[in-house]
Image 1 (cartoon, rainbow, N blue to C red):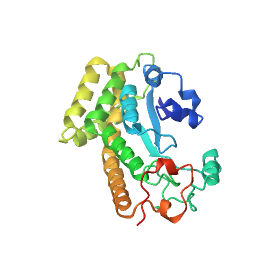
Image 2 (tube, rainbow, N blue to C red):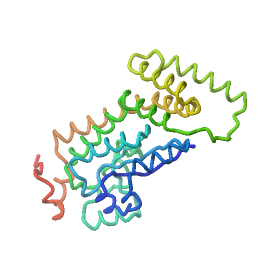
Image 3 (tube, helix red, strand yellow):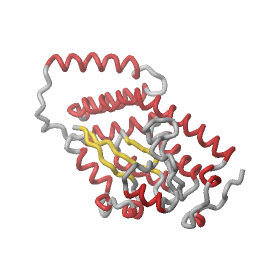
Length: 265
């Protein structure tokens, strides 16, 4: 009952430019809510770093995430993959990194190794927008708030899955361990009990889904700190050295109007 939906960007012009027209001419939040109401847990994907992005992309994504009430949002930096239309276009424009296929830190994580090309918007601005989104959506009050809203809108009355008794015992043991880890932790305990008790009394059939999403925050809290630390390090390098992509090769004509300052150091 988990479903991944690639929203990518809430801006229709950006979606059209990336040929993702199926996400346009509809209310994204209403479409997501329709799926959720049937008892499904939706995970959403967003990408930052598209050509033509507007300066308010971070706020637009944050607003869309809150409007959809999707708790788990995979937000990543655009990464040009081999043998794609995007890569061929960037290569024609002279914007593709020579070693674009190999991320700098040898990982395939879009959260810390994206933007393997010369961007239209200043790279530091994109990273700051990305940092803001990651930091805000994984705050405890934001994450647990979306979990609660999702759980309360779900209609799980038609579920036909019969869970064996031994699995129920396993789930109870897991809930006990989860409560020990989160039910008394200063930064999340209020939100933990708020979601658990509200769902238990108002929509108990959705409690299993809510607990599954709560448990994921054991990872997301640490993950957020890891990503923010990596982004801060990269932003510090950009502040000191500038974007070396703009120093080591000529700036494509199509990019020149979008760049107000070209680092020379």
